[in-house]
Length: 289
Image 1 (cartoon, rainbow, N blue to C red):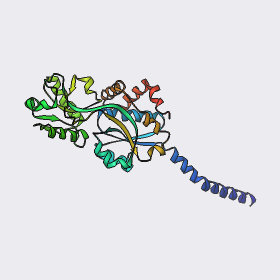
Image 2 (image 1 turned 90 degrees about the vertical axis):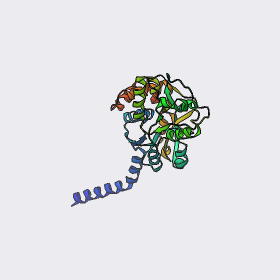
Image 3 (image 1 turned 30 degrees about the vertical axis):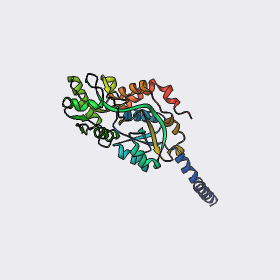
Image 4 (image 1 turned 180 degrees about the horizontal axis):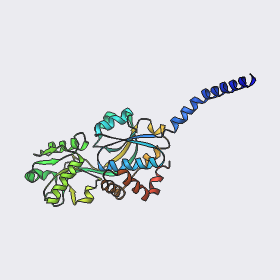
């Protein structure tokens, strides 16, 4: 009887301790949350940067989920907390409307790239150099400018270009992959083509291209590419916030990363991991506060 009573007392005491420490355990679990969701769009620099972040965090034990969508639903997802981060915010022009709409529900973390440019891109062999020359040779472009996803900021800006320059050309909705395929076909044949483009992008490394001059400044000047997170995310994730605040690449680094990713379709993580291993000292330094 004494043995049974003693065992019962120990059991009750153990349950009491568990109930008293349960709150602390849950708090610790929240502090060491290892799940991160990153939203992305199908633009090569976004794919490259996002997969680099994914493999680096996974090397440190995090469970990283990627959400792929168009720009509008991506901003909405981060604002609602359905995604933690988005690494492709072009400012001050391209994504201005989205920042105005969702800005109060997101926070900026860092600047990934400082020399972003939008423009209408043509092969170097095209014999014009400015947007205001397009109407005079519209037949050589088949009366078209090849665009990308309908929700992309550059599409709205290009519509403004067509209006402000009174261009008699149609903006064709496509995707980044479709635009690049059209560019390659035309370039290989030496045909004239105009596409919506931006820098950074691997197409400038693969082909001899130029951005048409924009004397009216409709396409804007230099832009930055930054990282946003759900409001309050940095404070809730102090161990990860410095990584995204310090994540920054120049033309050479981002160029090699993009080419590595683009050259390995279906194996983006493997390509990003190989790039990371070659630049480990730099990337690991981004975790420093």
